[in-house]
Amino acid sequence: EHAPANSAARIALARALASRGETREGIEELSRAIEVVPTAAGLHAELGQLLLSEGLEAEALKAYSGLIEILARSPHRELADPVEEDPA
Image (cartoon, rainbow, N blue to C red; front, side, top):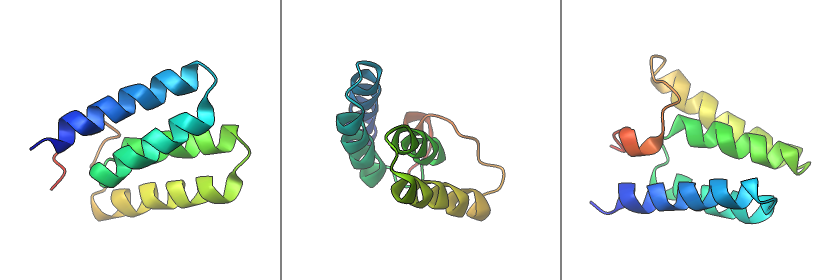
């Protein structure tokens, strides 16, 4: 019940941190949000972008692999914000 709100707060914090140049901290928060809503394809994509911006290619590849797995299971899924997705 509280997972979407918690996820939304973590996503907002991650984006705010990244926009202020605190990318590593943003990565940490986004990773925590993914733990709450692991099927949120858009979060995996966003995490991959942040990781690449920090030069963390191997970690970015893992994030993008997660994205590919989600999309492969549900090819019509969009990269919507996870608060609008059904985490089930």
